[in-house]
Image (cartoon, rainbow, N blue to C red):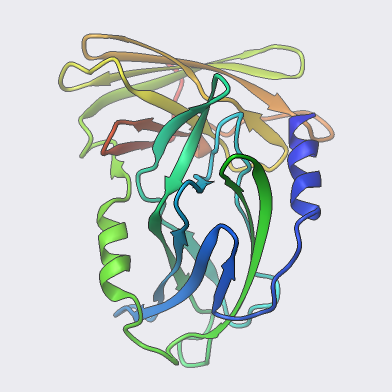
Amino acid sequence: MLVQMIKTLIIAAMFLPAATHAQEIYGDVEFLNGWRLADGSYQTAVDFNLNEGWKTYWRTPGPAGIPPFFDWGGSTNIADVEITWPTPYISETYGLLSIGYKDRFTLPIRITPKDPRAPVNVELKMDFGVCSDICIPASVRFNAELGSHPDEGVPAIKAALKDGPVSAKSGGVRSAICTLTPNGSGFDITADLVFATDLNDTLTTVIDYPNPDIWIDIAQTSIKGRNLTAKAVIEFYGDGMLTIERSAIRITVLEKNRAVEILGCPAS
């Protein structure tokens, strides 16, 4: 199964020493301490400077990619972590779509402490895939005390935040409904979106769900004027019965320079 293959690849990766900076054949990866916000949370980031010809992947990489995985298990005083994914680019590998990043990009990560008055220590192990002529699993580890290097990477983080997804309202989505049909091992999902203006025919639609035992391939997208229909298969690799909470469905419509994110998809 594809999910098991991905897990096997990730387990096979060699782990780098704990640090705030790692250099490998594919390029440099660095943890940016960022700054502290008024609510007591910290705006940090992981910064990738990939060598020419290398790429890595978005949170949903497509059938030709390896999804990133974040392990915060060794950290202390962390209540919540929120990742803002900059708009990715879409490429084709041996006839299969992949979604990701190349060259240099910054991945903003907002960390909220349990106790705002106490120190926050980050121990992050990040597994991800990188591709050039071949694709390989990679892994980095970072140790950092937040606030120890304030204002580190601020311009890059702010630029990446501006390149994050826009909301359904800002993106001109007038309505979104989803039909779920059982298929024996999961569901077939059809999302019908209506936008405020006519759409171009180069859009890619991604439907995802926050369950590691679920795999959803890139949706088949059809467009007619202001209407977008996206169809995909939800495959379930867990135990027991699959149930889908509609409020947790996330639909992302990718354009060349913009991502529109729709959170939740009610029935008609």
